Length: 311
Ligand code: GDP
Image (cartoon, rainbow, N blue to C red; front, side, top):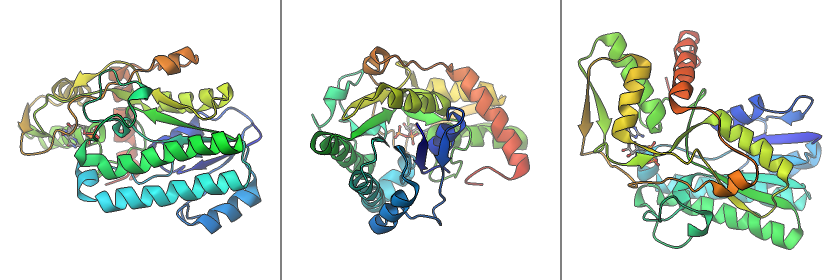
C-alpha cells in the first residue's frame, strides 16, 4: 500500500482510519477547502495529482435521528453528490482499491435480526433516515457495478452505530452516544436532578468503538474483497434504556433518567449479522463500557482544550 487517500479525514471515522494507518503508509487527508468532493472535476484533478492506490470514502453528510429526519433533502442529495464524484473519478483514474462506508440503516426497517447482507433491498426503509439510506444504497450498488464492469476492487463496509473520540457532540445533530455523554456530563457538573433521554428506551442498538471500525477498514483492504458488501459490528446489542444507564455510570451521573416519548424511537432494532466479517478474519476488540470510558476521558480532556466538535 504505497499511498492512501482518506476522504472525510476530519470526521469520526476518517480520523480513526488515520490513527490506525500502518507505519510507513503515505496518507493524504485533504480538508474540504483543498478539495470539495461534491465536485467531480475537482475530485478527478486531485486524484490524478496524488494517484493513491487505496481510497477510503468516509466523507459523507451524517447525523443522528433528529437531523436525518428533518433534512432528508440534504442527506439524500449531498451524499449522492459526494459518492458519485469520488467513485466515478476513482474508476476513471483506475484506482485499484476503494472502500465505501455507510451505516446499518441501509437495511429494511423490519429486516430479520441479526441483519445479514442479503437483506439489502428486501423491504421498506425506516422513514426517519430514508434519504441517507437511499443515497448509501446507490453507493453500494455503484461500487459493485464498478467492480463488475471495470475489475477494480471497490467494496462497501456497513458499520453498526459507532462512537469514539472526535464524534460530533452538537445538541441537534449528534447520535445517541455523543448526545447522552454530553447531557449526562453537563447534568453532573450542574448538579441537575434528572436527564431527558429521547424516545421510549425500548429500541435496541449495537454500539461499536470507532477504532474497531478503522481496524476493519485496513483489514478488509488487505483481504482484497472487491465488489462485496460487508457488515461491521460487535454482534451484540442493548436497549437504549440499558445504554443510558451505562452512560450515566461511565460519566458518574447519580440523578434520574427520564424518557421523552414524544421524540422518535427510530427503527426498533438493527443488530448486524457479522459472520461474513468474522469469516474474513476480522473481529471487534473493544468492550462497550471500556470504550465509553476511554471516550469520556477523551471528551473531558478535549473540552478543556476547546476541541470538541459541536460545542
Ligand atoms: P439511529 O440508530 O439512526 O436511530 O441513530 P441515533 O443515534 O440518533 O438514535 C438511536 C436511538 O437513541 C433512537 O431510538 C433515539 O430515539 C435514541 N435517543 C435517545 N436519546 C437521544 C438523543 O439525545 N439523541 C439521539 N440522536 N438519539 C437519542
